[in-house]
Amino acid sequence: MSTPLVAEGVVPFVYNGEQFSTWYKLVGDCHPERPPLIILHGGPGTSHDYMLPLADLASHSPPTTVLLYDQIGTARSTHLPDKPGSFWTIDLFVAELENILTHFGFTVSFDLLGHSWGAQLAVEFILRRQPAGLRRLVIADGLASTKMRTEARDQLMRTMPQEVQDTIRKHDEEGTRNAPEYKMAWRAFYARHACRLDPPPKEVIFSLGQSEDDSGGGNVLNHMRKNILDGDYSLVDQLHLIRVPTLLINGEYDFMTDKVVRPFFDKIEKVKWVKFAQSSHMPHWEERERYIDIVGRFLAL
Image (cartoon, rainbow, N blue to C red):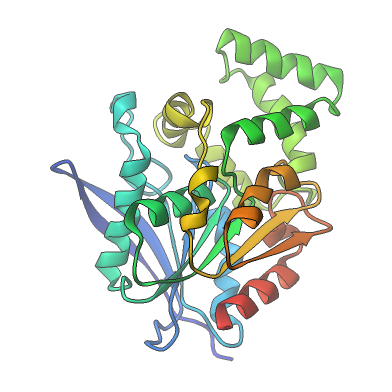
């Protein structure tokens, strides 16, 4: 199979009268009979880089055009360090996704794959817009309830060395999340429950690093934590409104545990759940070949 075409650039994005830019990478030939797959990265405040294994789908049989992008505020897209917390809302990210679909002419027929926070964004987009062109959905390592996520994460945290637990608790209580020892403690947790590859791929390191940039992704993450992620947020009672065929994914060691992802399985009518036995939060890296095969087959149905 020939090497898929790759295009990179920026999409103008106007929101509340202001113009910003969303950086994208498009992989594949945009065949009119095969809907593109839009990838929504996690965070918020990371980047598309750690999701690059999904570009393998452009070389899969049948090939799928893959569109990845850096969400507003992080990595290669417009940074907005001076925007107040009230600017950073789910509506902003939904509008950005809608703008990208319109820009590329993908609104008629497309698939969505959201990972972690990106899964949450995908669901919010569906619930708020009910897009007629959405064909299939992949919910990868995502949450429907922040309370369930926090309970699961806290339970896993209790299995970590006491020093790690104490360091994270101390800086959470003191509001000093930029402290180097706090970041190191979380990296120890992530090595078990986010990406178990040792060393982690450079793309994963880069993406996670964006969420530590106070002028970029770190700023986005801090505001979204305060606004939504650290609160009592739940989509559970609305999940039945998702009517497209859905593939649900998580990993055996994932901090998005079975309890966290189960509401998607229980509430969505047309859903298949695949759990990766050798993976944590990033089976697209940890079991890359199987992951691409499963997602590719699902999209080809």
